Image 1 (cartoon, helix red, strand yellow):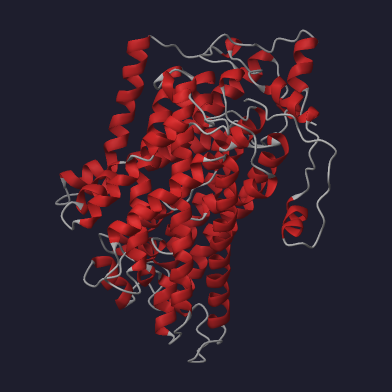
Image 2: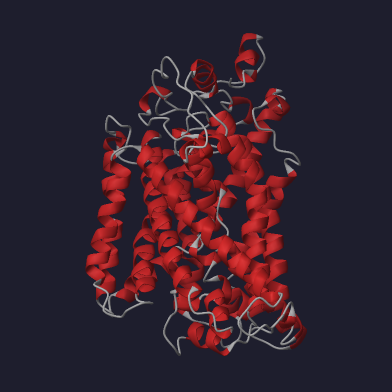
Length: 561
């Protein structure tokens, strides 16, 4: 069932190199491949739909206007598709625990893997308490006397329970939570279309009115053509922190039942997701509300409450403007599931990235300990320490500390995409030198290595310049500077520190291990005898429309990646 090209290359005596760099063998990885097809597909979908799609996207609209927002999100979606193209080829070939983190160590430089792992872990871990705090804020949409400490404690307990027993629990939880996200997206898309053609209490077929008045392009910071260009840049920065996707799909690779098939499908659908979810959201937001809406400006400026809740959502504001009274409550309720899902995903990815670091000897060895169900228990315990930072929000003064931590880690996500692009360039170079025909691989990424190079240059430009405004005359602010550039300064320190201490070297293309775990995955998939239905077939089975096939025996054990 799996691709045999690398195994065949060895038996034919071709020059595919089995490198010597490894802190562990495949047998040291104790995670279990228990995530099924529908779970992987919904994790891929749910992981790409964050709260920013429904709320924070309005900041890009206000700064750039509808035209800039739509163009910026379209451009960024194309660049993300190029990054996805690189991640997909590597992850389907080598579905390892830790995803791109361990690939960076294996194929580029151990120091890059060390930097990538801690960059990713810190970002994921700090975002857990941030999402919990956002959840308490969303609940305040209905009433002000929310018992914040109790809500935080319940969230922490639920995250721990979902992630401690078996990966199936996480997969099942994300399946249903992601379904809620899709439902919310469908609601706001339908709301946009129906109301723009006149299906609203005011019977106002407003169409693309707000593209004409106040206009398609807003001025930001300065005025005139330069101000409109800066508005476009602000919309691009908004896109940069709204888009997520390929790194999260790669992170579940080590626990996917049939990675050659399921991951391949998940990565392939990413191209449609970027267009539908993000570009579609930018278009809808630009239709339903003008960029100079007084309510929206008041909330974003802090002059009125509601920032971070559904009240700050451009959709909810548009519903209020049209006199629609029920949908805002539905939107807020589904936002709760969206935010909870985000925190759950960060918990999972945080623990798995830390486990991947431990496997490569870049985190303490005791972190390799797993339960019988294949859960890295100590990694999870350490990750669960971070949500406790959410209790800082019980006090209005200490809540600023959590916001400060989150702001410092802002650039980490973009740095992930830079690392993915660099890793693929090294992987591509090794394939060329060793004579491996990439078209024989389980997933062949077209337009390479240009995809990786464009992704690398674009993302590097974004991460270096998105804080340019702090350098403008009269705009200098030390807090803003560190918000923009803390990770840009910290990551090189992590990289250089590990490199100097351990005297690591770049992996030569002729010595790159292109085989790694591929033969064991091929053997595992060839021996897999469980029923493996397609996505829609499995969905039909869940709701009783089709019967499940019963096999005489189940797969003996999950492959250790």
